[in-house]
Length: 279
Image 1 (cartoon, rainbow, N blue to C red):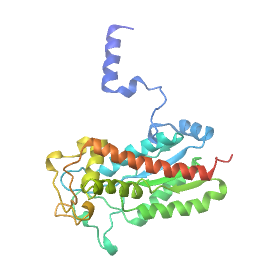
Image 2 (image 1 turned 60 degrees about the vertical axis):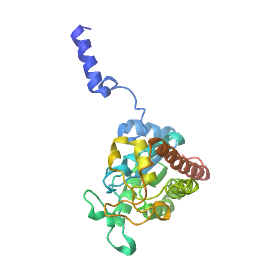
Image 3 (image 1 turned 90 degrees about the vertical axis):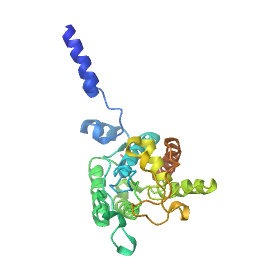
Image 4 (image 1 turned 135 degrees about the vertical axis):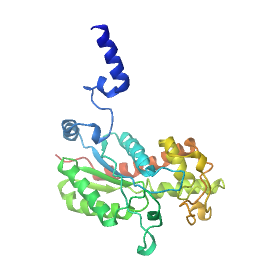
């Protein structure tokens, strides 16, 4: 190969690393990284779980980027898929409801950049995504969310689709332990050490974001809000509750591992109960 061609290839490989490995099969567990033939082969040779993980676009004071839920959902979805083994993650769904109390408007909607969809739209979108995966051959679907609002809708959608398709050997699961059960464990740890872990933009919210996307946290803007109720007090004028100042990436990794383990345990239990795919 001429020297100029070698140099050109080296330059291309540095600037566009994907070009050099254009013919390599993807190591990713993300559906968007695969071709339809590759997905069909996986579906045809096993019983992969199609993971639908929901993020959200929500303001969290001046220190956290709006995509915090998206970044965490991507990281936790990939970790869950790798732990399960035979699983693939659909593109992260970036929108979620932001509901206020008793049907009132969400307090987050007044902050610039928040994107909210209605619970009905959120439920319909997740149902359509699940139906698309089922239409493509998936017989095991898991619905999850990193955002508090929307958990009820995910549970309802999973129950409805499971009732519709279970007689055909297709199962749809709501995996809520990675959010609710894990959050309780995380916040209980905070109580045990006398440090409020909760809050919107508080310790766990900030630390978990630091662990998966450090550039999404403006460390110089971390400031405490209401630390009552384990950090889950009222939002201040900037939309923050809790105390994020002790947050580190190491703490975030610990909290994230609790979430992934809780989701993995729940999904494995459901898969074991469902048994092998038929056909």
